[in-house]
Length: 112
Image 1: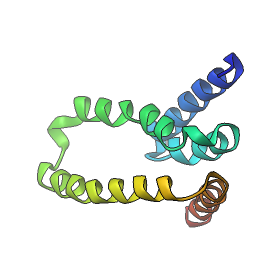
Image 2: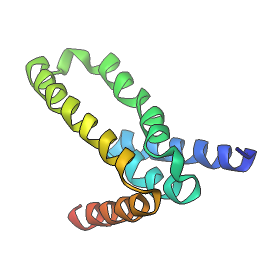
Image 3: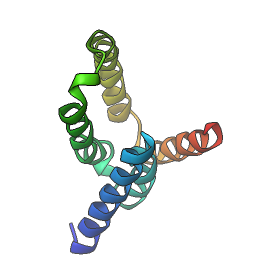
Image 4: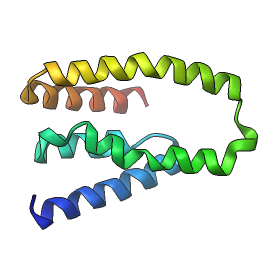
């Protein structure tokens, strides 16, 4: 992978993390479409790895204010959704995945 691609990915991760930290979402919405266009084989692993630190930092600083019962239910629901997402990404060709990611981002923009 070229230095330019690595720098682009780092910049996207930093900008997406900044947006996510301020409004609650953004890393995937900002970085996923660009990463999918530049290096589709890196989606979704690179996005998940880049976004993993922010929730952990939030838990570390806000643990006193977490509703742990609700957190448990959210995590319980997240596990099968993650497995389903991995299976979909593994089954869908990269070109279709690019279009799907783009459509989902546009839908998020319209909804927000």
